[in-house]
Image (cartoon, rainbow, N blue to C red; front, side, top):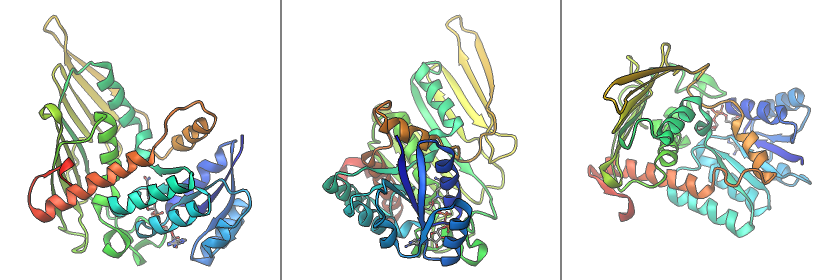
Length: 345
Ligand SMILES: NC(=O)c1ccc[n+]([C@@H]2O[C@H](COP(=O)([O-])OP(=O)(O)OC[C@H]3O[C@@H](n4cnc5c(N)ncnc54)[C@H](O)[C@@H]3O)[C@@H](O)[C@H]2O)c1
């Protein structure tokens, strides 16, 4: 099996997508597109592919199975719908789009045209997340009571983490869909929905624009209530000069913490749990090279397995749209200064 791939938006993250695609024996990168001709020319030379500055020329290419959309967030919907209408499968970077309504228009386009729409929820492949998932599923720490999922950084590079560096820091501009809620929020909310296996019942959110921008949030805090009063807290800050543990999970039989010696590398996990004989046991686990995001190509390995019928489910567009719904609720709760019910909206 061989899938032909194209990439739209040849900025910083696209370099990782190109490497993963090229590294996979069943994927073939055939074409790229960017509004910026210089970046198209660089990619053509580097990857020996065709390049376009007009997206419709890329989408007209014969035999294109997938396009991967790696542009700033504001054009995800427009580009995804355009590709789906032309019967091309889509992989779109997180956040799926700017809000739930937009995400659902993308879902409808995929349904109507009977094509796949996958969102690159890369943090599902993070090693720290895999460990957390396996530890909870093993029952070692018992029933979940409270979960804290935190990313505390004070990263000069955050606003300019893109191809144009400080000359175009789109992550701190509202017009490009910037801000921490849309940047880190999709990762942490997606992980939460996977871990819990259900939606929250109520959401309380606070956003702040403290240091980096007055247009978008550089901090958010969300408290999400689940059935049985389980509490999941998601907190992200780019003003956190003292790092916090990435995960702190309290269960009825034990506690799991994932932290790091050199944040944002979270490589140390500790599980403390009670044995039936009343003794406390402590396990320390060293995770190798765990970085702030799952940038290892696991997504593409699973995409191919899915196409081969060896994997039943993948990152479904319905799951990704739910992520956008929770992000909307966090933002709306902040705007309305009140707790919002998940099914009330
Ligand atoms: N999964 C992850 O961990 C992860 C990490 C980083 C970025 N991302 C996501 O990747 C996307 C891109 O981020 P980035 O940091 O690479 O941005 P970037 O600024 O480095 O690159 C974006 C590129 O898109 C191009 N572009 C803009 N509009 C376009 C259009 N209409 N058609 C074609 N090209 C267009 C720009 O010219 C630029 O080259 C964002 O949605 C971001 O959230 C995901």
